[in-house]
Image (cartoon, rainbow, N blue to C red; front, side):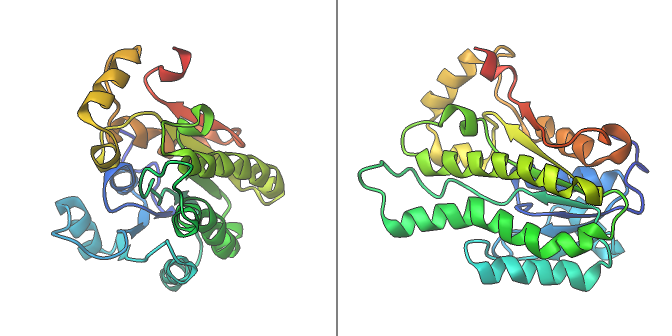
Length: 256
């Protein structure tokens, strides 16, 4: 766990933080002293985790809901950030999901458009909308979530999802060069096979077990394994000379 004052006075926005990796990233930023705008997903569902309810009550977290499958939803979240923060130090673009497994011959235009909007276009839209706030920071950082599938192409039915993650990876490297004169660093975290709702929804137990056996560390990852990578890349003190990089968090999965 990082020091409780590492991000004291730092303003952070985390998208896709209703569950899984995003929720754990928000939790760890809060534990390290940051003020966090938490994108809780499309809409409220169920009781808030105790740490988040406490942080909201104390004013350390601002909870917002928005549907990133539409441009209007993305811009409404950006507007919420701007209403609460004068400066944004860290943007974590984590929202996104596979939506479904779509065989290439059966993929519809609507399915294609939804996957691209949610995982690719929304990242560009939110980054563009929040750049004025990021440019006001003396320690601006963007951390984008990609995926091991950006390199491997993923498994059957995930071609478009994998391609959107490859887009975000390349987009991030280009942004890192473009935004360097503004002092804004841009990096990616690329999770491997992580035990979240994502794989509970899109992968069978048999597929996950087969994957586990190929991983040198002989286990699937957890959100707790992934979140510290985001904080590392967001911290000017820890990674101030790191930009344009993709940090792979996969238990050695890529070396097999």
